[in-house]
Image 1 (spheres, helix red, strand yellow):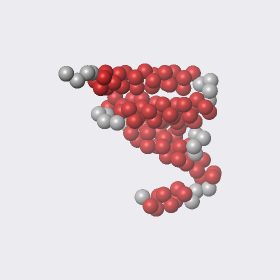
Image 2: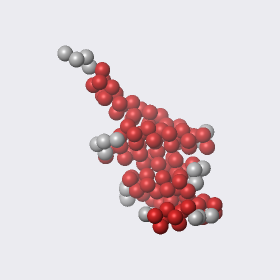
Image 3: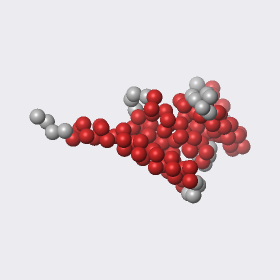
Image 4: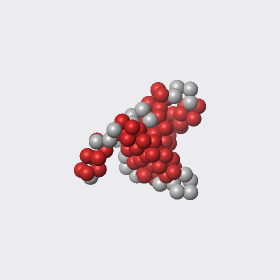
Length: 128
């Protein structure tokens, strides 16, 4: 809402940093298997990134949540996975040697290719 946006914009740099940390930690909570609320995890990560675009954990967690989230949606899977790939690339720019990040990058690429494969084959069929 407008009041929330106004309050967000008036935050000090320290306030934004704290908000980013808290939102990223809330996202981790929503990723927990006992809770598993992936859309809320993605939303909290987006808030964390808006508050602090240098929050590497928020990019990693949003990509992780998106990887699993696309298994539960019908439309928009390619856009979700494309954003997840951008997130993981951003994360790896900040933490280049992170093995979990590299592994997630590979899994995202394979999943996106697997989902796009049938679509691409369908569009390549010749007309009778």
